[in-house]
Every structure is written in structure tokens, then in C-alpha cells.
Image (cartoon, rainbow, N blue to C red; front, side, top):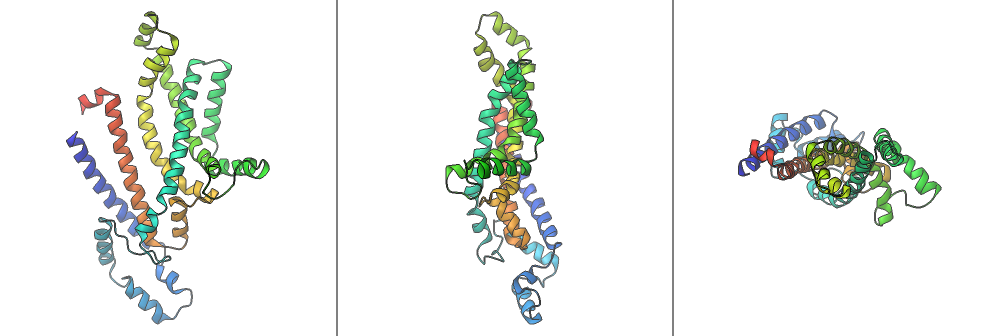
Length: 306
């Protein structure tokens, strides 16, 4: 276990270094942030003073070294637009994004597992076909289309939920459904295929031959084994879900990290973009590490072969 955690720690440092380097190069290739601060048509002397103050006159490798050494300790400087600590600004948006991701992920997991089991156990029947259809449709509709449809139907036409903003439970429903639907559909199909494979295995036939109830066979013996590969996919998709908040938060006006990144990109607020992406990269690596740990607990063969 110690060796595993040490390797993951090294991987985390390497990923942070690569992500930080790419961010530095890509953002500086997109335009001059000094124009944003000074404004179009500003006095050249003012532009020069700002350029000197922020260190943009230094050679690129000097800027890079200054950036990478500060990034490794979580320092990204002040936001160009807000004139306050960029990481502090980013961290203030994390609770809103965590709330949205948690709600979308929880909804997807809680619904997809029974739906996938139903699709497998009742294969060929009406309920099984219906569960499979829901999964197929959910995975086919693009996120931004689903979000706009939900606003049109449930906010504009029916008036059941507020279309924008954050603060009440009702405002969380539509963004969470939009964010979690693709994961719900994908997990349902995975649970179904896993259950179909497990239900035809020898130990399940043995459990039935011993006279165990069908409920016990399905939920106590078959489902835990069918969920082992699903756990890995859920972990990877949780990382994708974090990236998906950029679209959902923009559509629903949700004041989270994704929307902040979009706003910062439009105004070329480099420190904020760098801090936000750096934080998301750390979250993705930590989630994948947690998934590997859970996988090793669920499947002892992984621990033996490691």
C-alpha cells in the first residue's frame, strides 16, 4: 500500500508539472493581457508600466520559471480583473461546483443501479425494455440540448423549477439532472451488461440450486461482482463530470468553478484560469487514486497481482 501511494504521489507531481506547463504556453499564445488592463487605445507609457509591473517584459523562460515555482506551492498571483488572490477567488467557487457535481453524481448512481438490474433481470419484458430505452435516450442527447429542453419544459412552460441561479433546493434540480443524465445512462448499460454476464456464471447457478431466494441471488451474490468494473468507470466519469460543469453552469447561471473559468477565459484573466485548471487537475488525480483503492478493496485479485 505504501508503494502504491508513493507512486501515485509521484504521478501527481508529474501531472501537475505537465498541466501547468501546457497552461502557461497556451494562455500566453492566446493574446496580450496588458491590453485588457490598460484598455484599447491606452497611452503607450501606461501600457509599458503595467507590462513592467506584472513582469510581462521579462523573457518567456523567466516568466515560466517564476510561474512554475509559484504554482507548485499553490500561488498564482492576483486576478487581473478582480485584483485579489486568484486561488482564493477560485476556492470561493468550489462549494457551488461540489454541490452540483455531488447532486448529479448521487442521482446517477442511485437511479442507474436499480435501473440496470431491472434491465438485466427483466430482459425482454416491458420494464426491462423501458429501462434499456431510458439508458439509450439519456446517452444520446447532448448535455447542452438536454439543459435547454429542461429549462423550456420545466421552468418556462410548467414553472416547476427556477431556470437560473443558486440558493434553493429547487434551483439545484434542473442543473443536477442535466449533469448526471449521461452518467446515469452509461452506468445503467454497464450494470445491465455486468449483471447479464454474472447471472449466467456457475456460482449464481449454485446459489439458486441451494434454494436461495431470487432476491438474495441478485442483490447479495450477483450485483457486488457486477459492480466491480462499474466502480472504475464511475471514478473516471466523475472526473468527466467535473469538466462537464463548465457547460451546465454556463447554461443555468450556476455560480461555480466552471462558469468562473469561462468568464476568466473571455477576459483573459490568466491567473484565475491557471488556478482553476490546476485545482481541477489535482481533483482528477485524487479521484482516480481513490477509485484504485476502492477497486483493490472490492477485488482481492488486484492486491495479489500488484
